[in-house]
Amino acid sequence: STLNVGDQISAVGGLNIRSSPGGALTGSVTQAGDTGRITAGPTTSGSFIWWQIYWDRAGLPTGWSAELDPETGTRFLNK
Image 1 (cartoon, rainbow, N blue to C red):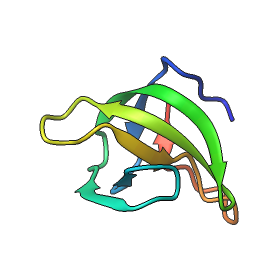
Image 2 (cartoon, rainbow, N blue to C red):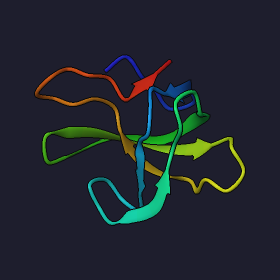
Image 3 (cartoon, rainbow, N blue to C red):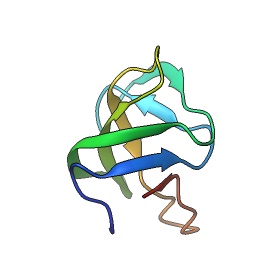
C-alpha cells in the first residue's frame, strides 16, 4: 500500500462505507471525487486492505473503506 494514516485521499467512485473492516454497511456510499483523511489502518479483512476514513462531505460518516480490489488491482482510493 502507498497510503498512510494522515493522508488526504479521494474516492475513485461509489465506495461503501462500513462500520468495521469488512463489516456491516453503514448505508452510505461515496461519490467519485469525495475527499477525506485516513484516520486508522491498514487492516486486512478477507483479501482487502481497509482504512478508516473521515470523509469531508457533510452527511458521510467516518468509517472503513477498501483501498483496492485484490483480484483486479482496481483502486478505490487515490492519494
